[in-house]
Length: 520
Ligand code: TNX
Image (cartoon, rainbow, N blue to C red; front, side):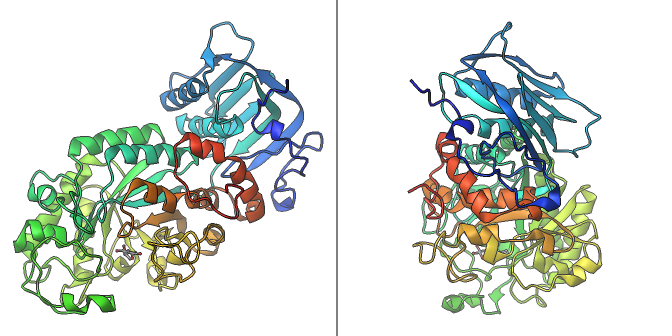
């Protein structure tokens, strides 16, 4: 009986090796072996040689005491496949910290020969080596595993490989966030940006302003129970994510998108709304200030009363951000800054400048949406570009770097295909299909630290829909941010990703069955 062991291998497609048309990289691909290697994101270099390493239901695992996260990841992978760990086994998997390696903070070497050896300068690199091994192995347990002799050297092009979840418009459970972290990690994504506050919900417990969560978190778009995370729960998530090499970036959206805060503490509002909201159908939001909770989908109608009540406003911001900084160890605190009505009246630029000072006093850096370039923020700040053609040059001139989320490539609340129900079209009327995401070329942007896929959730009411919007497009975000342009090729990407369907199934992802993948 032919055991449907492998992986990679046995699907031995007699295709020329991937990326053979990327001579610029000097990628060494052996002529001897030509097993298709289905890795997403595609690694820096793959060298195959003749022969296979075969093992059955047990291995000897040797990990490094200084690398607990990768040790946990490899153990979890083995147990998921039902592979036992024994002391005296001929098949050895070894994870080794080698400080002399020069593959950056996240790079690794993976060699499969008489055994499997992953080397990296640190735990993060080893962890990514394990993720590659996970993709080389089958998604489900087999009687026997057959892996091609191979040597991979790999490191990411960008340090920021992100996913944003909007848990404000529609709340997501802590369990879902953990699941999302595991899925991100398996594609080597490393920044989970949580949009924690917006008009429809405030999702983070703030002890000095308790009604933010208990009142502001009590509903969501379309009504319903909403919800919020306690500080303890967020600390738990931060730790869980860190074990998966994912950093949680908290966003408190200021000074606009604050209706939930205003509904919790009416004194934060001015007495009026002067400027037309952004969307036409939202014009009736102008007039007297709204002081209650909001369950609709308009944007750009709320703001803190920055210019008329500066003392209260800055005290509020400082007390909130102080608690946020104590929960989230990330270098950057995202302060929003998008879609603020009547920028003059709210002295928007001055507000951003002041909030940067607060963030500096907390020993952190600002990350904010592109509009915050109007404030005088430190050059060490990051701005998140979201309108494709926004003039961000003045910020670049100051030395500020960018997280790239141009909406026509990365807005995952837009359709997987033209006309997908329950998706937005304001940025790209044909939606943002997988191929469009993949066509983002971050190399064309100066001073970019990486890319982030943004899943706004006004129209995303449940986990299945969130999965559908995120996957498989986050796999494209992963490759675009990890793999240099010379080695990116959409056809090869879809070929590899098609073969990883079982791996997405194993992670229980309710992905969109993308027509350009073989998943129908
Ligand atoms: C714009 S992008 C927003 C969000 C909306 C999104 C809908 C940005 C910084 N602000 O408030 O949810 O469009 O696509």
